[in-house]
Image (tube, rainbow, N blue to C red):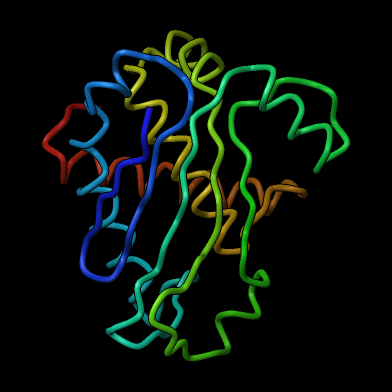
Length: 181
């Protein structure tokens, strides 16, 4: 599968992978990407939001999203996190966490980070959470997006804050996309 590109204002999401899932091949996920990028762009632009940062209007903020299978994500999880197990999503920030908030970016393109989602794991979790595969992938993408911003869930307080924000963004994106929760 080739990579596809969606954008909203100055946010760009390039996505694809080698997994041959009909939902991804047909581009069903596209109905969420425009809404997701719109909500995330507005959230990042609010000065009172914990996720605010400054950039020139011409700067294109790019996120690379790759779908893979269980073996690939297990290999990546072991290599980069030291955990020899299948996981649902991995985030690889290309900007120093939190330090980017103190800068004003004027680059033409700001490669912001890579997100890798295991579709097999997402499908299993979708059944457990009574969501569609597309909704679960969206939920995992939001989780990664918050990691790219520098949020984490190492302590109970961090976990509570991050998952609260994740749930809020997820609900806003579903509402913007006109999809029931």
